[in-house]
Length: 335
Image (cartoon, rainbow, N blue to C red; front, side, top):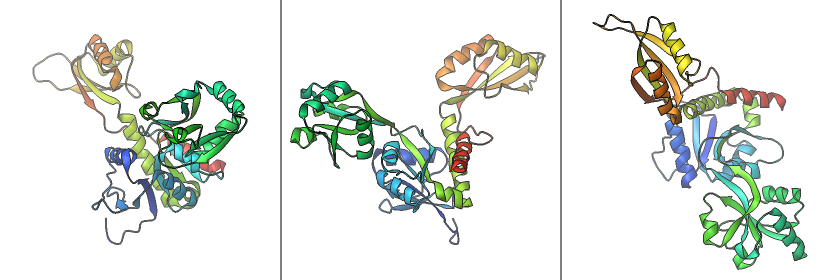
């Protein structure tokens, strides 16, 4: 990056924890490695994208920064986006499935209450003759969820560890993030059946007004989605190569269509193999297949006459245009 490069675009990433590590790992896997020479700094660069500056914030603060326009893009959890995005639609989710940070926001109650599901929770709240006290970091999400199910509740906004709230006595139940559920079990809490408020994972968000008003931000959105979608689509794919004896490339293609359930993105790529001594014609066929169907595909390719099958990982699969970029443009047009 040159010293005269003007940076007009900012992206915020989580500053610490597993979400931070996996955000950096995803960007690196996409070819967008973040360069941060000093781990104590809260700014960094992406050398392959010299027009963007990287900032590091708490996941919840990322949403607020994108919402108020001080940051153009952010990677954070859908849970904090849903809680803090505000009512005006300033925060636009560009990619809703980055493949990490999976969890859910859910209701949990002490095992001693014997409340198994929402109906039991509703009966318990009616027996209390007062609003149900719910400790949570998600008052908007939890409040809307409980109101919709006609459960009277008093929301107690709290930070830090919520699992101890019922034991201490300042809450009856909690509404918190759950991943494995082990922490709940350790504290003698149980999930309430049908009490999942939101399924969450890491998402890419942007400020809608910046996308509309700044061509550089709009172009950066296209670039980010291009790299992310190409990598995520290719992550679970393999390229299969096999040699086949045949009279023509069309014959090879027809055999693959007849014998293989996976025939590539649009179809097989077939090319002539130049051999020195064999008088027969050889062709090489290339297919892109899901990794989980590798063994099945190898058997099918063999049935079609393939030999010397080679499977290699795929780094990127680029579309003509990222589908999520088209959806973003449609969302911007709607207002």
